Length: 338
Image (cartoon, rainbow, N blue to C red; front, side, top):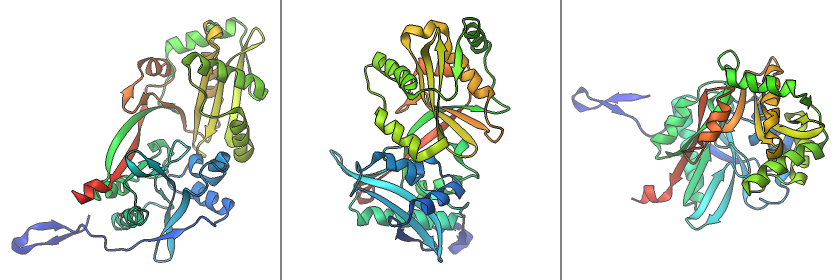
């Protein structure tokens, strides 16, 4: 942090940025160029790529934007977002139709660089006549380097952390599968449960639908959307299915978020076949088979809007007790006007 001496020798904080960042419209940039920049970045994930967001087809046409933040000729950061009209006013969302968004840095920024990017972003809010903005950042496991300074710049400019949800994460060398988890997996093996790592889509989706039908809600994706995602993202979207007595009993739908972290977006079990413990065996085998380059496996959030889901915590803790925050930063125009 930069400081200067005030009259009487007191230390004062320089709050204005000594740099200036320019917002650049990158909407016309090609998908490969954008996605390559995301993949090389400090904190970009599959959810930030245009190939992933393209599965929405024309759902966000006219509302989504892709921008860069340029300092001295260098695009130091970029962000995708959409603007929606809601009861609370005009709201900017990053992500939109994905799990992670926020500012993606091409390299680790210094404080003045981070502050300049934040100032440029707030100027963009004003230009778009936004009343609120919500940025949900990836968990720390998705970062190649610390970005705490950049997050401090957000707080310094009036953003607030409005949601801190906990994501359960298996960490290679640190997490341990519980005795209960191993017993459940052995029970499934003795019952003859088998696993197909490249199953028919119909078998995978049958388990997904059975799971969500039990909870009375539809899956996040339609079958057509999930197929489209697989075509767009290639081997970054995978599925596997466990079978009990020939029937699909459990399934995982996984998104490879970065080269170092895999994640289970769908963790599903047919309620009629839960006693087979197929899901426990499937998860254990998935963790045992992790690519040597992968250090983390995310099980997704175990809380919702900061409310714990006790049964979800209990099940996931059979495989890891490590949690990481997914923070949502919120900016409100009303706070500026106050």
